[in-house]
Amino acid sequence: RRGRRRGRMVSRWPRRAQVFAFTAASFALLAGVAALASGVGHRFGLWDYRFAFALLRYAAWTGIAGALLSLVALGWNLKLGIRVGAFAAFAGIVAGALTFGVPWMALQEARRVPPIHDISTDTLDPPRFVALLAVRRAAPNGADYAGEAVAAEQRKAYPDIVPLSYAAPAPVAFARAENASRALGWTIVEADPQALRIEATDQTPFFGFKDDVVIRITPLGEASRVDVRSMSRVGRSDLGANARRIRAFFKELARRG
Image (tube, rainbow, N blue to C red; front, side, top):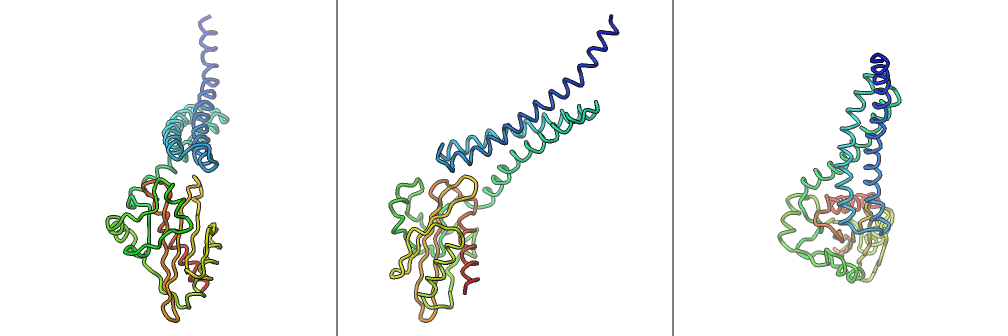
């Protein structure tokens, strides 16, 4: 009897190992789904950015817990020679690591850049929003430039963000700037050839955060000066997105000139 009882206990271990592997993997995969939902839900207006960030944070910690459990399950299933359980555990490790790793890398990036969200090539007289002014005033970050404190942070972190001297008359520079904005996928809100001002909105890929851009062309004889301001509507730090946007615009504009 004892032998039969011991045999039944031994036969249960493979089943338990496999169930543990699938449970751990499911834990990690659900965390991954929650992380994806945090961005998709915000993009489609199901919840605000605060809830989206909270959901992503909890999903990340749940994901790393699922990955660690899956790691234990992987060793257990490999020891017992259970391939299906080992495969499920490996999938859990990958899902959990990605769910934790991607937000963690974004956090490291946030720590490397200053906690600012308003970047301008002209920090003394930043281009002003006109067509988007009402939208900006209704947004949490407003429309006003914060002044020298932000300018100093910007100069330190992004010394390359300066006005562009463009070798074309203002009307030509304006037309090319508008085309460059459209090529980058920005939504043009207003393009005023008389004021030589372009206002547009861009959206971040994952969360769908809306950032606003204003481009100002200043005539310099047969040449032009191009100033750009890119400003996030929400969030204290933009993770460097506004500086990257201005660089991308200047690169696209140079390609057309």
